[in-house]
View (cartoon, rainbow, N blue to C red):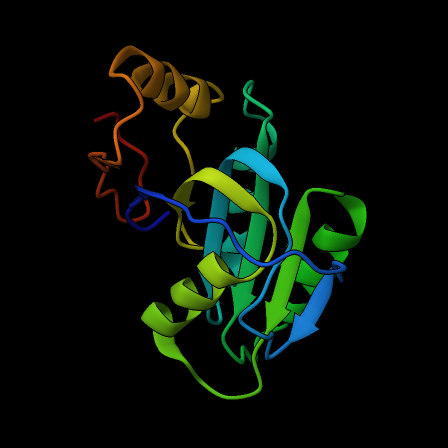
Amino acid sequence: MPYALFFLLVSFALIEQNKPKTIINPPIASWITNFSFKIVIPNYNNNKYLKDCFNSILIQTFKDYCIVIVDDVSTDGSQETIEDFVDKHDNAYAVFLKEKRWNGGSRNLGVQYGPTGEYILFIDSDDVFDDEDCLQAIHDLIEKHNHPDCIRLSYNWCGDVKRPV
C-alpha cells in the first residue's frame, strides 16, 4: 500500500435533515448524529485499494464511527465498489461527484456531508490502518489528554511494502 496518512480534526454540528445513503453533488447541509469519529475517505481511481482500506476500518475494535466516502469522478470501477460497501454497512455513506474537486475539495465535502463525529479522521483510499486497535488507541489518547481540539498523528510511508512505524 502507498503511504498511510491520517489526521484528526474537531468536527462541527451540521443542520439536521433526512439522510440518503448515496448522493451526487451533495448540499452543504447534513443531519445530526453524533459518533466519536467521522472517517472521511476521498477517492480518485483507487479501486484496487478500496477493499483493503474499508477492511482495515471494519476490523477496528472501536466501533463508534461512521464512514463518508467521496468519489471524485473515478473511471476505474471505484463507484461500484463504493456502492456495494455502502449498501452493506449502515454507518457508511457515499458522495459521487459529477465534477472534479481534487483531494482537498473531496475532503471538504466529506466533512460537510453525512453524520457528525466528535473528531474527523481522514484516510486516503489507498491507505490502511496498521492494526485493529488504531481507533481505540486514538480514542484512549483523546480521553487521556482531556479531549484536545486537534490531534496530529504520525504516519507510515510504506510504498507497496508494509513496515512498522
